[in-house]
Length: 197
Image 1 (cartoon, rainbow, N blue to C red):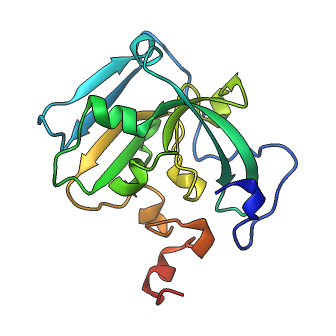
Image 2: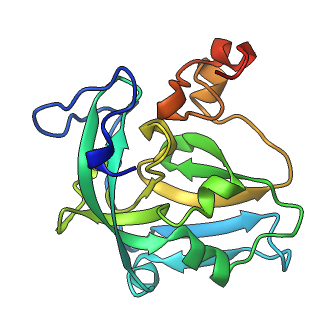
């Protein structure tokens, strides 16, 4: 959604870009860092990239609003990184893959539907507004899923697991909504039982 279309219900534009996360900020050790795509791949095999290898993959830019469940929205953030569709071309999901688990440092995770992963604006971001991400904002890479609340835009991504059935991630297991659509204010799991508006 572009910033000219207004904010989702209950959101406001803050001064600056607030820093929110659970646990400590991991230290990047490029010589030991890698990214895995695994699970229900079409080939049945996983693929790994080292940090130098990942940094050479084709890049794209996406301009999109960034909606946090704590009610702030950053309008028109300019992200740069590797589109999820590019990763899916390099490591195609199996035909029966329906969901994706995004794994981060320290075992943190978030689940999204395969349709969310393959949306044209979902990317593995390395830059925002022309600058490399800082560690407190998810460097070296964070997943950005602009059309969902930002807990689905996992910081410090280390693995992407294709799933053949849905499975809740870290915050979803702790009471956050499984889908996280900010335009429908899908913040908490108790709302999952509410009839659609």
